[in-house]
Image (cartoon, rainbow, N blue to C red):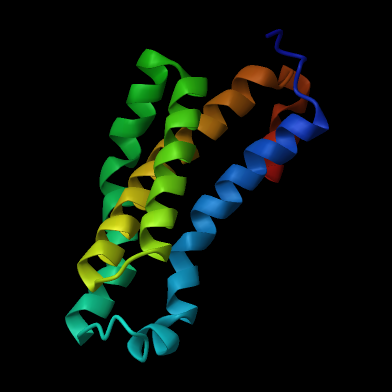
Length: 139
């Protein structure tokens, strides 16, 4: 696509991807009281891992995921990230045991690690040079 091709819907879509991925970092903290009294009956350590699995996997894979997107295609990395993120969220939502919930959160973290650098790279690729600063500010 030409560098001037970034339109408002594309910018909003890229920003929405990042917003969802980043909001999952804090979202679980709001659910700790409900999670503690849920049918899963997680231990304190399992609650801790439920909160931390996403962040640990996300942080650990962020740089390699960015390099993967640069080498093999940013659009593909974004789509793979969204797929992993959704699969992890579905796994977490349907979890019947704390370990499955933790694994789902980790899978979502891996997806978020692909989503974040891919969206910024696509933004820079699609935005005209004069509009990049504003696009980055929105991102």
